[in-house]
Structures are given as structure tokens and as C-alpha cells.
Image 1 (cartoon, helix red, strand yellow):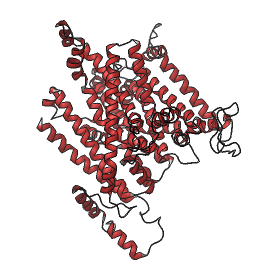
Image 2 (image 1 turned 135 degrees about the horizontal axis):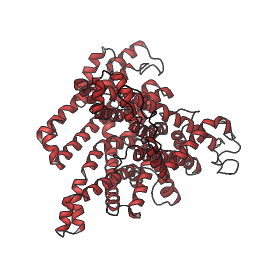
Image 3 (image 1 turned 90 degrees about the horizontal axis):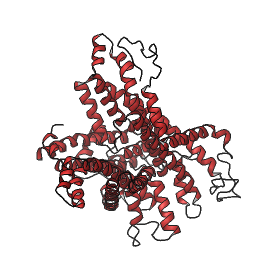
Image 4 (image 1 turned 45 degrees about the horizontal axis):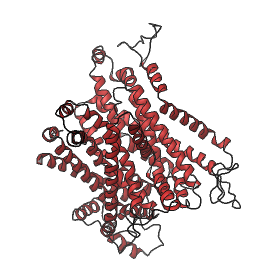
Length: 310
Length: 300
């Protein structure tokens, strides 16, 4: 188990370095310097600016410096707001995004499991078709259509929930969490249904039934853990999607999270902010993929012993 | 799939069996039985035809404004209503569908070409080349791509061409994996070994055995890639990083509609429904094609 974790972690480091190298070169090689578009500045000021952002040094030195600083957790100053560092902006935005993503995952897992279990136990009846059609709808309706429609329905027409904000009015976290989570709930429901139907057809389930176990116990204790493996392997990569989704949801609901900062940085061409945030997101995604791998190994003893090599 | 002898001359044309059912024939029958997939196909055909003819059949000019009218709800003159500048929303949705569909098809083709070549080369080469090539795919899979595309648009500006290339460059990896799997499976077939023994070149084997055999999965996966490409474009345009005004795609229309939905909900609802219906149709058609062309893999 430890060997598996270590080997996966060792694989993650070159990937991360590659991401930083690609992002860094793209930002540095971009046509036009970051100070070109601004009002003309005197040569001395420009020199000072370049020195502050390390732009006067050759590329490999810039890169080495950046890596050295990033390894110590310092992502440098922002281009657009010189008195704020990228670290500060991530520190202020990320907790919000994390909270939003956590609620969304909660929605995704609870709604998805419930719908998937119901559908698989009543396969090919209306209790199967109804949640599965809803799931197809959830997959096809992107968050930037679903979000505004939910706001229109529950916020404006019914006036049940606040239309925007985060932590200002009670209940204003509900719509963003649902908007972000429902697509994943739909995927989870489809995966759980497929995998549970397959598991319920196994011999050991028949044995459990023959032993006279209660149906609820058979499903929850015997079938579900085995059926959850594909859900876990879906959730790891889904984190990447959740982050992209948070861009949209934070824009719709005007939530001051990291995704909204990222989009603003993209509009402002705030290169250091984009660079820092991209690296931060990459670390997150790689970390969650790693976590999913480890949980999978823990759930599935077969992988625990053979997975280290593959 | 055509039956082909190792020497290359097509057999099934000479031996005319009266009740011969080809794989494609069976697949078509299976597809026709799937009502949702047929609905999807019909909707998509209509959509593509309308999108192609839009410059001639659109009821109004694309950017002709009518400030005196302003935003008006759907009426007999303006079926989808008008936006705040008095522009006909139906016309704008139709023109938007041209952009969205074009991005969908072109970016998918880019992904298709890269993916098929990559997967075939990896599968056929085997050994170290295969290991390295597929390792690259594994690594790329782990990257945050929505973020990378945003980065690209920031650095190189927001052009349509870049959008095609960037989205295509992101979506090819699953295709590469599928093609590699197909190549490996076919490489192990005895008739391919026989063909190799008889001195057919790799290229001939790819053309005569691999492509006809892999065509089913390629078609299925292409159909399923188009919606995710359209979604990605709409996502970028919604954030304001994709299609730039005065051009509009569904994503930018939804974004504009979302801003004014309190007063003018129709500006959000119509582009939203059009996008959702298109994604629905493509997904249903893709699922249907998978059931029809590859019955073994259609488990869920």
C-alpha cells in the first residue's frame, strides 16, 4: 500500500514540473510584454519593473527562480495589483471555492447515490426511467444554462432563494451548490445504476439472499461497496471538471472565489496571477487523482497488490 | 465491414448472397429501432440544414437593430422575441448555431485526426514507442484543460482558429486510447498475421483491416465528442473568452440572456433550449450508434 502511494506520488512530480514549464514558457513567450499596453513609462521605471518581475534575466534563470520560489510556496506578486501577491489572492479565494465544491460534491453524491440505487433496484420500471431521464437531462444541461434557469425559477419567479451572493443572506449557498453539483449527481446516478445492476447479479448476492439477509442489508452492506469502485474512479478526475464548473457558477452567482479571480485575471492579462493559479489548480487536480487512486486501492484488494507496477 | 481476402480483392462483391446482411445493414436496423436516437438524428439534420441556409432564410438581418422596439417578448413577427437592441433573437440563435456547429465539427475533426494517428502509430509500433506515447496521453489526461484553454486565449488573443485548434488539441486523447486498443486487438488476429506473412506492408494492413474494423468505434466516439466540444466552446463564450462580438454563439447568447433574464427571460430561455436540445440529440444519437455498432460494449 505504501509502495503504491509512493510510486504514484513520484509519478506526479514530473507531471507537475512539466505543467509549470509549459505554463511558464507560454506566458513568457506570449507576444507583447505585460507593460506594453499601459501608458508609456520612462526607461528607468521600465527597468525597475522588469527587475521586480525578474524579466531582465535569461529564460532559464527566470524559470529556475520561479520553481525555487514556488517550491517554497511563494508564487510572486500580481502583475495587475502590484501591492497584492498571488498567494494572498489564492488564500482569499480558495476557501470559498473549496466550500462551494464540497457542497456540490455532497449534492452530487447524495442525489446521485439515491437516484442510482432506486433505479437499479427497480430496473426497467418507471422508477428507473424517471431518474435516468432526469440524469440525461442533467448531463446535457450545462451549468451555465441550468444556473440562470434555477435563478429565474427559484430566485425571481418563486422568490424562495436569493439570486446571488455567498454567505451574505441565509440560503444563498443553496442554488450555487445545486447548480454545480447536479451534473455530477447525474453522472454518479448513471454509474451507480450500471455498476449496481451488474453487482446484484453476482453469485455472492444470491448467497446473501439465500441466507435470508434483509434486502436493505444486502444492498448497503454487500452490493454497494463493490459497486462504488467506478464512482470513486470517476470522482478523482471529476474534481478537474468541478473546478472548471466553479468558474461558471462563481460568475453566475457573483461568488468571490478563486474561479472568478482566475477569469478576471484572464481578462486583465494578469500573467503572474494566471501562472500561479494554473499551477495551484494543477497541484489540486493531480492531488485528487492521487487520492482517488489510493482510495481505489483501499476499496479493491486486487489493485492493492498488483497496482504498484501498472 | 467488407470481407477482404489477404490479397486485397474484395470478396463479397463477387459472391452475391441473396439474403446477405452486412454489419452496417444490421446496425442501421438496430439504430432505426431506437426512437430517441432517430429523434436526435432528425433534429440534427434539421438543425444543420437550417444553419447552412441561415443567411438566406433568416427572417431578419443579423445585426440590424430596432432601438425603437427594444426588447420585446415572442410574437408572430419575432418568434423568439427581440433583444435589448431590438435585434431578432431567432436570427441571432440561428447565426449562433452556425458558429457553434462549425466549432463542433472542425474541432472534432482536429481531435479525430490527431487521436486516430496517435493511437494507430502507438498500437502498431508496440514496445517502447507505444509505452512512451501512451504515457504522454496519461500525463495529458491529468492536466486541467479548461484552464489551459483559457490560458491560450489570454496569451494568443481570442480568435476562432485558435479555438478550433485548442479544443481539438484537448479532445483527442480518448480517441487515441480507443484506436490503440483497436489496433492491438486487430494486430493479434490470425488473418492479420497471415497477411503480414504474405508480405503486406503495414500501411496496407491499416487500410484494409484496421480502418474498416475500427470505423464503428470511431463513428461512435466522434458523435460523442461533438457535444463536449460544443459545450466547451459555449463555456468559453459564456465566460467571454470565446466568440467575440459582433459574432455570437449559443454560449455568448446565454451569457447575455442571463444578465437580463429578470426582465427578458426569453433571451435566456431560447438559446438555452436550443443548446440543450442539440446536446441531447448528439448524446442520444451517440448512445444509439454505440448500441447499434458495438453491441458488446453497450452495457450501461
